[in-house]
Image (cartoon, rainbow, N blue to C red; front, side, top):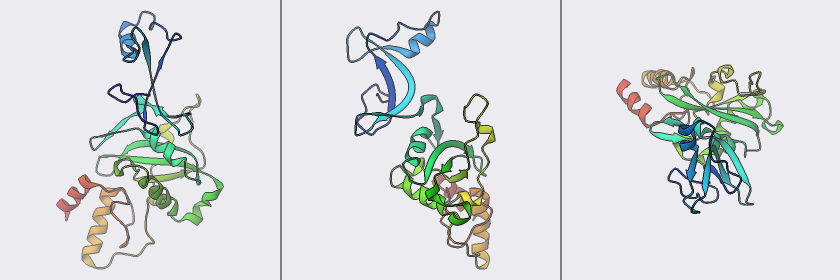
Length: 234
């Protein structure tokens, strides 16, 4: 398991899986460019070759490997390279989550944002019971384990992940997040002209239909770049 510089990653850190040893092939048949990309000289054993799998993972404390997704599924948001599979793996550590996938979508301002889609376990209760609390709980769970830029803006609850006929995730069938997908506070209408104006601007920037006076801009997926746009509109 190596980082972007070819150095081994510590236990618990995400890295790309490389395979070495006598069982590694010499390359792809009649594909010299792909061979050069995927089969590299080992920096650890002279004369050995490593196969770059493109799979991302990490070592667990018990020595097992956890698959975190594909390297070619990386997304770049606000200058940060992000592994959606790592976020999904962290989501699945929560008792309420049975399955999860994280994708990058455009928000109302045309910027990329992370949206999590989760299939819940029975412990999560029903959609009627959570009242947006699911999003708040999962956001708090991730915020304690990941940097802010890796925490999704919205958490959409699904009965099942949509799949293609080949059994792969059907990204086109993923619904857009509704208000319940955000970590909204108990709703209380804005008061006065200033609060009403700000609620309208927040709704436009964040893609949330109804903003209450107790909602938090950053907990609803806001970030520093959107804050600059917020100031410009104010």
